[in-house]
Each structure stands twice: as structure tokens, then as C-alpha cells.
Image 1 (tube, helix red, strand yellow):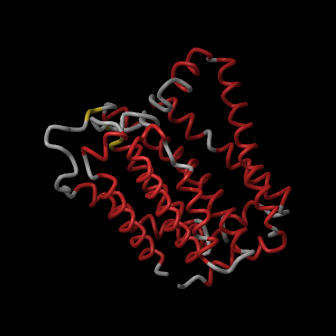
Image 2 (cartoon, rainbow, N blue to C red):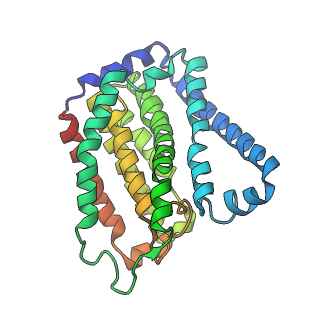
Length: 297
């Protein structure tokens, strides 16, 4: 495995790589991000209490375009929590979580240039049996509204995906890699935690498959990070995946307000109605390989 560049991100973490710091760091990030989120929502509730109660924190999270944008941009609180934690607990600058700037940006665009055409092609190719013949997608937003919101929606998803990559690949993976040389530790542990974080008890029998998919995604992102020595390709993969899942066709549940179409079934029903989750795993593998081709490592 060509992981020589991984050292770019591991080296700054070695000075303070004690396991107690890592455990305390994860706890600190969780608490700080939660506190900042509560402060954000309470601040919004002071000025727009009815909207916050009805749309932002109602029974469906992110069910409208505005509430969805607020939730996604709200992941900036996680970024702030990570930056503060590494500064205080590890005496590291936040830039060390990303890797060198020039290679990071170069690999981000290199991965995205290959990834986007591949994912668009996969979306256009019909997948036999993926959708029941009587279950056509339901329009959610008018195309003009969707197109007008697209630039700010992509920016919001970039914030959300960058925040998650900073926590799992930028912080946890690198701190573990500074302590343990085996990929079985620094690749698997963050990926499993990432997968568990996607557990949804409301998904019924589909929930374990979602956790498995997210764990495999974490492993793909970990591999790209180690190959690149930066978070660039992992953020590109995460951005493209979430943009397709949130902006094109999605389930009519949480985080669905910015989608052009809604599927006519729920996550809990998906396993019985459609093999989308199996296809998603195949698409993930193709996307991972596309990113590897883009960065050629």
C-alpha cells in the first residue's frame, strides 16, 4: 500500500499522541460541538421561535430548504470544536489536520474531476430492478428553485462533509496513526465509529446495512487520506456522495429539503422495495477507485 505521504499528517500528531489525549479529545469535540449547536439553535429561537419549533427542530429535520441549509451550515460548530480541541489539547495548528495546502487542493480537484463524471454516468445508467415500476420519484422542488439554491447548497454540504472528515480522518485517524503503525487500528477504529454514528433506530431492518455502508465509506476515505497525505480526496468523495444523496433524489425523511425529487418509500421500507443499498455499496467502490485514479496513488 502506497502510504508514504501519510507521514505528512502523522508527524504533527506524534508529539502528543497519548491515548488519554485522544479519548479526551473526542469527548471534548462532542461536548463543544453539542454546546455550540445548542447555543446556535437557542439564538435562532430567540428571534424566530415558531420557525425553529416547526421547521428546524420539528418532527422532520431539514424538511425544508431553509432548515436544511441551517442544519448543514451548523456543522461549522463541529469544525470550531475540532480546531479548539487540537489547539488546546495537542498544541497543533488546525492546518495540520488537512495536510499541506497545495497537495490537498490539487488532490481534491483531481479526485473531483474524475469522480463527478463517473457518478453522473452511474446516475444516468438504468439499474434494472432498482425502482419498482409503479414507484416513480415525486417532485419536491421546482427546477428553477432547485437550480437557484444549488451553489449555496453545495457550499453547505462542503461544510458538513469537511467537518466529518476533520473529526474522523483529520483528527482521530492521525492521532491513532501517530501511536499505532497498523492500519487495522487507525483505519478500522475511526471507520467503525463513523458507521455507528449513522445508526438510525427508525430505519428498522435497514439500519445495519446503513451502518455497514458508512463503515465501508470510512475505510475508503481513510485509504484515500493515507495515499494522498491530505484530506483532499476524502472530502471530494464525501462531497460528491452527499450532494448526490441530498440534492438529486432522496428519501422523504430527515435532510430531504434540498432534493429535486423524493423517493416514494421510507428508509425502513427500502430493504423490501429496492436494492438501492446494495447498489450504493457498488457505487461507493466505483467512486473510491475513481478517486484513486484521479490522484494516481
